[in-house]
Image: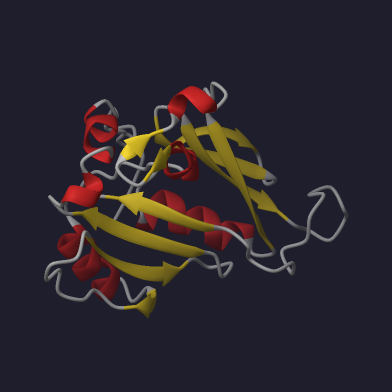
Length: 176
């Protein structure tokens, strides 16, 4: 599957309008979001096999961490009802993950082909600064696949994206 580069919420906090305010922010060297699931196996299959994200750490049957960018990670946590997970998979889903890609149409076609739960379909770019669609993962978390257009509002983000390394699954990792 084609590459995805993710810019975390941090970048949106660092950039305000068309001028960077990085001098006012602390050094952030990485970030991770924990997502909680009753059906951990289904979530693991979704991120590993369907989306093809690179797995970098696993505690067998409890958690699995995927690397989305050099410094950004998503960790799936199994809520088996014992309290070990610290949070419940039944809590409101207050996280949405934006996945930036230059191949948003291909990802959309793939999402349709895989019969993913599409919450907002891909619309024509027109004169907007981005084009995106939303799906929900097996636990109900929103994933936004987003293309940033060549637009004045995006000029500050492009140099940050150029520095971002492409992350691919290991060759032995099976994906669809």
